[in-house]
Amino acid sequence: MQKGYAMNENKNIEHLYNLNIEGLVNLIKQEKEISYSKFCPLIGLEPMKGNSKKSQLKALEQICEYEKVGTKFKFIRLRDEGELSLGSSNTKYSGLIEDILATYLINQDQDIVFFTTLELIDFLGLANKNYLFIKNEHDKWYKRNAIRESCKDDFSMKELNTFLNNAYHVILKPIIRNAIKSMDNKRSVRIQNAYKGFIIDDKENRKYYNILSSQEDGMKFTSITAKILKDCGYDNIQQVHLRGKDTINEFYKMCNVLCKETTNYDGYYDCYAIILNREGLGYYRNQNIDSLKYELNKRIVKRFLIQKDMRKTIAAESQENLIEAFIRTDSKYNFQQDYEDYKTYIWNNWNHRRKK
Image (cartoon, rainbow, N blue to C red; front, top):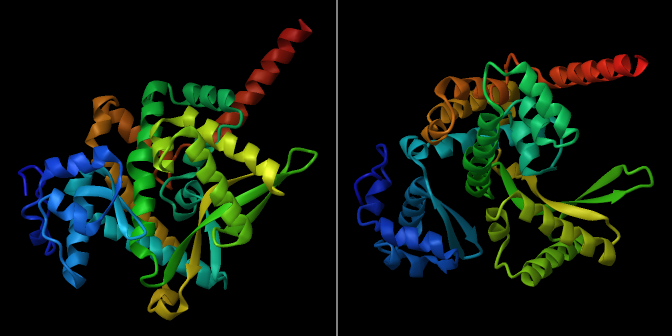
């Protein structure tokens, strides 16, 4: 294996000694789905079977992020330096995430729960309430100005934007995806792709419906997504997400227009169905969910602190303040209150000027 990609001590790393990084980079650039037997020789690896194959894929996942699509693989990106230095820590996140989800389902006496990626970030405590507050773009102008006023000595708005973008796309979303992939059907929970369909009433209120992709309406949503992908010239949804926020919004707007024309819903979006596997529960019944979330958040904070790429555009002190503001669940910041205070100030000031 090439110098610069040596991992921490790992009993699986022996399966990657002949890894060709250049070949792996080429697979990432191609953005194609490829079978295990075909990609192995392209990156200098010997195809294996059984537990050796599992160990090899697990070691490979420490170096790069990939998706499994049926029996094929799609390589997405190389891990950054911070992720590599953590070695196999993704499995540590995954174990805690699985424990939290299983414990919640057991405590609520439920067999299934539906979450979007952002809802999972909130529920699991990967970030705090301030993060969800700023990610919700309702009243965006007031929110941003309230934060600018209350945090002008802590970080700049440019640093805030960079941090939020990296937090989601580089750290939080990959952790969720890796956890979902690693836990699926193995122990206490299994995962299915699902949708949240919604209907808008006369007062612009939305009523949501949780729908498995295997159900009739779910299959309709899948077909709509596939049609819009084809009409726009995309091979898969990842290509849409790589083009940025405006393209993503336009794509789903087109999906919802077709959804409204062909179904009883006004729109939909993707989510996960987390299903309890009662046969694989083991010790999960005695877990304390608050303690699990606290431990998970501690690990996430450490993950942010070693994210060196952010320091190219964010000052070290600002980065620590941003982690405190948006990631630590015991944060001293309260942007909801700052926002309400700011709106009150603006309103009172406007009334005062109008009376004059």
